[in-house]
Amino acid sequence: MTSIWKTEIDLDIVNHRSKGTLCEYLNIRFIELGNNSLIASMPINDIVKQPLGIMHGGASCILAESVGSTAGNFCVNLKDFYCVGLDINTNHIKAIRSGIVFAKATPLHLGRSTQVWHIPIENEQKQLISISRLTLAVIDRKKSRKE
Image 1: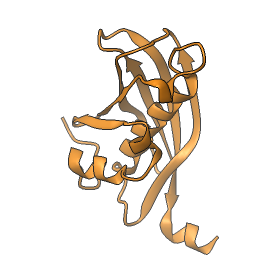
Image 2: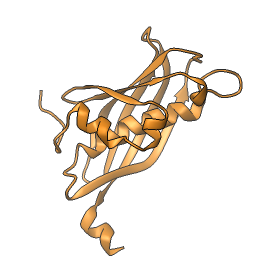
Image 3: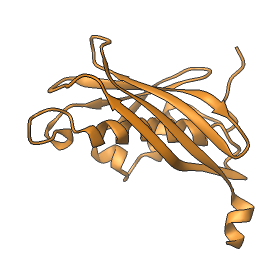
């Protein structure tokens, strides 16, 4: 299978990029790298819960956008381009109160100006917690400097 990655990537590089960001604060860790996917984990703790004691829907979106946009940025030549979130749609399927969730980003479309990513989030028992579709804008660094 041909790899989707256009910029050098390994788990150390990916996790290092998250230092000092919301990913680090929420303890999102990138744990698996495939030829066409990236998987991240996030513990369910008080920081990501809403007042009812279940994972906040926004935390699902943060995890999905984090893994999808991180993957997207390694699918372009980072010297010339970068990717940013344009739209995210998340459906919350099952509540979760504890444990760890896993988000796997795989591309549906890798275009010149947009990317679309499919990101299911599952619990440790492989039950679907939420499903997201993330659209990224691919930005040309040369053009964005002129604006």
